[in-house]
Length: 368
Ligand code: UD1
Image (cartoon, rainbow, N blue to C red):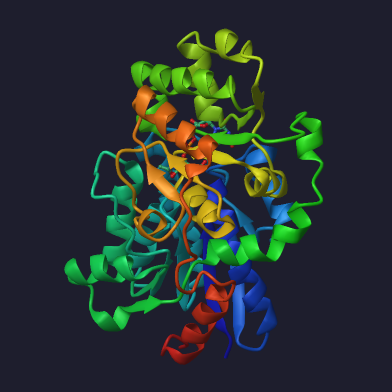
């Protein structure tokens, strides 16, 4: 009997994590019958379809179309729709990745229906419960039967929370599987020429509610970017949440007039990876980008007070700089003066994480 696995994705960072798993299932057609469900949490072409195309993800078998909303609305809509599907299909396993609202919703539904649940990227903790992702991670891990982790500190977090050792599998980082697979292809992108970035440049992303939903915090970060772009051109793809706040707070016009800040629409995976690979410096509040820059060996100034990915600071190229304007500028200056952080690639961030997960699934007593 093939193992029937319902795999759930919803938002942009999920797609890079699911792509290598879908590719691995396809290499074992006699063992797995995967179903891909897209909740529709992210729905714009450049936040979703473009990623499916570039990551060569199969078209979703089911699209729930939940869209945006408050946390409760979005989570509840995924739950209501997914419950119908899981009751009808009764799969052997539900597979969730990352820490977005769709991850949490799918975990709750699977657990209530007593369907085994696997969580990829389990055990990451910022210890900051004001982050919605922290709540999503805590609940998802508590409900999971199989916790697949990216680093040793995630294992330690789970053990401390009472997760039994036999539920934890240190397999590495599936997002890095995708990066290593597509790195060469990404270098063919003409995005640098399109943005007029002919020599050194920096790359900026910003979307955490804690950074962009507060007018004062956002103003401080923008003031740092204004200073840095005087020395280094910056490419800044603007997330829809950030664009909305820049408009709402009346910042958009001023920011778009800074000569060396290139504000662009959200980019596809290949353009984004191409820009990151060639950047002198990355400034970001994204957890995924902390991991990607660590593998690329590019210094990343992480615009947060804490991180759920401490290995990118202890072993990688990430420096936690918080949101204080002067600190951000001072750290950027260090990098531009050639004193940027050098790191090493953490264990098992080697392009083989998905194949380790598939191996675990084959060996575990999941099939009915
Ligand atoms: C979500 C995840 C976050 C992840 C991020 C990556 C949660 C709680 N947060 O945050 O962990 O790092 O995705 O992007 O799940 N919008 C659009 N088009 C879209 C999607 C969203 O315009 O395709 C706008 C909507 O106005 C929406 C807002 O962006 O209200 C925020 O979207 P949402 O999915 O709620 O959260 P993100 O900030 O994207």
